[in-house]
Length: 94
Image (cartoon, rainbow, N blue to C red; front, side):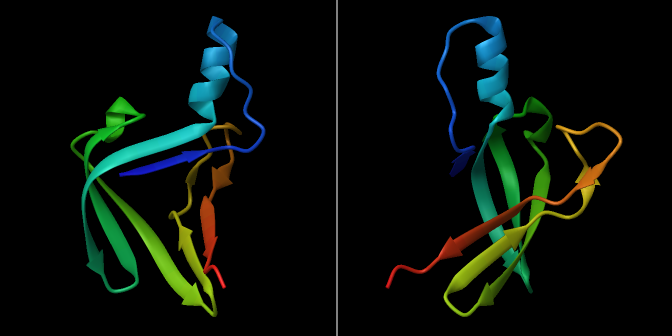
C-alpha cells in the first residue's frame, strides 16, 4: 500500500476543500512485481477508481543513498494540455 500527500495541505469539509484534498494525494493498494528497473502495481483499490483492476508501472533507480521513482510521461492532471512526470525521491537515513 502506498499513500502520498502534497506538502502544506489544509483540511476542510466543504466541497471545494475536499476537491483540493483529493487532488493533492495518491493512494494505491495491491500486489507488485519487479521487472528490471521498474515495478508494477496490480491495483486492487486506489484513490482513482479508474486505476482499480489495472497495472501501474513505475521506474526506479538507486543513486548513492537515494531511491528515485518516476512515472512514465503522461497527460498532466493539474495542467491540461501538458505532459508531466511524477518523481519521488527517498533518501536513506544515516
